Image (cartoon, rainbow, N blue to C red; front, side, top):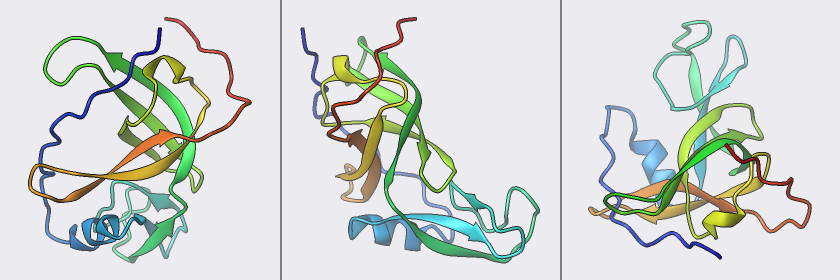
Length: 144
């Protein structure tokens, strides 16, 4: 039996100084990450300094918005349930904590391809989330 996630209210994200380009890009349907100019490593959540080498020389970079589900959990009880929280490994390398939306919750698999979608928060801010990519070669679901 398929279980669809419901449209639930998305709280406004807490904004830190310097987050504006990230959410401006999300409003345009683009996912940004930060790239360190010194060590070359990308990171997410975007920060003012590199979490790997502590360099302040970091630049915004467009991400493909595609990745693979590393792990996930489906909440079936409580406010807004059912919904899926997941860690997605972006093709660029960083792992992002996110929600899987607009998908059959029973079809979600570890290792499955996903793509970014942007959902409005209660205040109208676009928030990056992910949905299942349309592939026929998804691995079998791993029960826990």
